[in-house]
Length: 595
Image 1 (tube, rainbow, N blue to C red):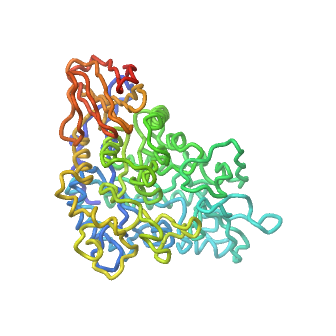
Image 2 (image 1 turned 135 degrees about the horizontal axis):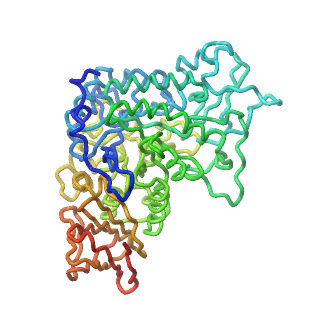
Image 3 (image 1 turned 90 degrees about the horizontal axis):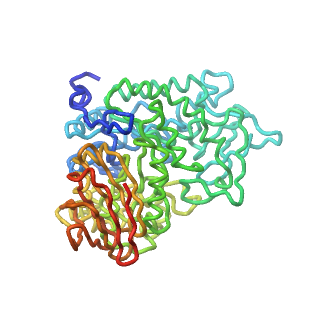
């Protein structure tokens, strides 16, 4: 890429974020932009349609860049833009170096990239490298016989003695065998997902070199990061050994939306292989030659998602970040459950590397998480959760529409069965389309400003019309403006962006974090209960942060009363050396929050 097209932050190191981690961490590094970043995930199909064909596109995103910038996010993550077999929302790629014609052209992409950079937005692309489409030229050549140049670019195996699949490896979405027979070769190929997504053979060095060439192509165009889809699926056991069966007392693996036959196995041979870690090192070496570029991996569907994801970010030789299934639980939110997740994440990831997701194209909308579609949470809960997520150490991926509080679209009330597009619906009856419906931009046009077509690729739920961008834009009490306030405030806080994190001991209903960087110390206190609670802070003059929309009652200089499902963020920077605080909830709690 020509130097004049590079964003300023990629050319002048003096302009890169200059936070230095505190010396007590013994690992002083620059506070890179992805430390504490907010990454806005966009599904181009569903964001905005500029040519009225019913499906969103790159020019629709370009038209929306000022809105995206107003959120205060650091980067956008664009879901697959490539030509695909249209099986799995673009995750069945036919050409990894091209733009799908329905989304636009490479010129459109370059213009989007440059316009985003001019607004200070980084751009991350989804890289689908665990598999390809069965229509990809590589696979067409590979399946044609056993002697061609790409014969072993995919996972092929001879039939078992009875003529059936070579082993017990399942496809994770339905638990049926992941093996599919090809008469031309007299062999089976393997896929972890749908039949049209054959798994690449990462044990083959030629495959790995081809992937590096593709990475180089996009890096040279100027992207700022890569989200590695299903990175823990890259390698399979080279000996093709069966997955061991799960015992009756073994917990289910993390990250599965529904139990199926796949969860009856410990998925340690069909994916989640240690070889993947070694194979990622050349990719990190390549990326490190492009300053300011980050690698974010998706690590879910494994026995222990937090522990497994942390392996991918260790020692500075693999990925910069990995997101995990730590917050993807569906029981009612409690401080105790959150404290357990945060403690484990801090203990396994250390200072950097964790990335949090709640809403997602695979895992549903944030409004439905933690039993949100079954248990009544007050309106203030959503603002509190936004503040909580931004207070956690690490980056956050925010799924499009979650800033509006969109509920999950229901089947068949919002999406008729005959309009479902996700093939997973054949297994569980609903698929993942409930979180993928088009963005509602206004409520005065038929398709809420998404498109002027007769019928968009997925219907827009009636409940989304009143939550549209135009209506929330000028409402000071809207969730959209709550997110804007919190994101823009968060960006300006060194303690949030590059600070240490201390999980403070506290009883229900309190979750308490201390974020510190240099002279700034913030106490982030969350009442995750159904009743108001009191807290006493042993500081001479604690200063609550104002303007974030949280109400509280100051009972004395050091004592506060916080409503149910609300937050109190307190700046104690002036008293950096004084660190003892005590906590009281009505008359029930009187416990210390130690240093």
